[in-house]
Each structure stands twice: as C-alpha cells, then as structure tokens.
Length: 51
Image 1 (tube, rainbow, N blue to C red):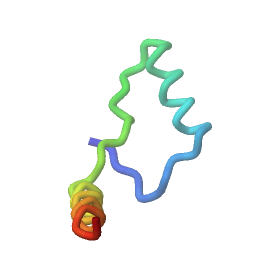
Image 2 (cartoon, rainbow, N blue to C red):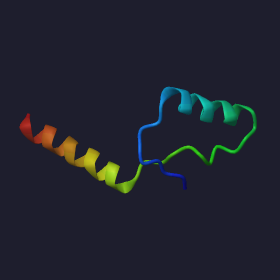
Image 3 (cartoon, rainbow, N blue to C red):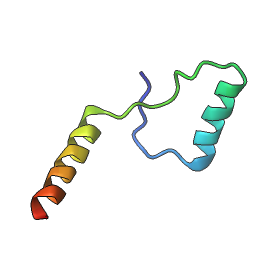
C-alpha cells in the first residue's frame, strides 16, 4: 500500500490515471488511512448531532 503525507495535485492524479491506461500497475493509487476515516466518521457524527 502506498500512502502520501499530502494532498495530490490534479496533475499527479492525472499521471496516475494515465499510467493505468498505459498498462502500468495502479499500485501507486493511495488508499485512505484509518486516521482519515476516523476523522471523517467523527465529523459526520458531529454534524448529525447538531441537526
């Protein structure tokens, strides 16, 4: 699994997609980390509580 410690630019994402179309393995596509998923879930719960 490949992880980045920053947000990818639109150009970087386009390069990754183009590599896949050219037959190059797409193993370089990042998966969300568990910390990010926890943060998103917590944010969702806070928003839902306020309604």
